Image (cartoon, rainbow, N blue to C red; front, top):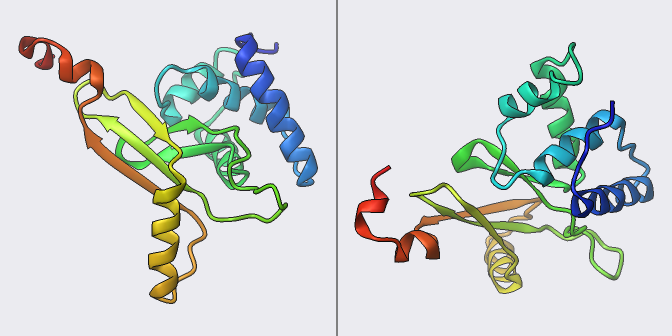
Length: 166
């Protein structure tokens, strides 16, 4: 019944479970399975792709099941939504909890290749600090932020010109 994930993903899932327990939240089998599918994926994963894969082991899986699970994972900071692609990527860094135990807004930063749709997450604290400072000066309190930059990844930039038209 349990899905088979890579050793790296299993380690991240165990870390996610610990994060949830520390917060008094429950990483159920379903939540763990969906998170594992997102973490194991080489690229951002859409909700309906997750649903199709879930139905292989859970016949009764329906869109609300997936969306409720994704909402939980987003609330816990275990995944990010890449708006441009309407898809999800994992984030098991405990990135919203600082060493002092305080929760600080995290600015998820993504570089999205317009050619191959590869997504790379950045963690540049200067970018987050500039955004927080600008918001603070405007009297605005940020709960969360997602910054998405579109362009060409290093692989597509160096590929022969004819490779860009697929």
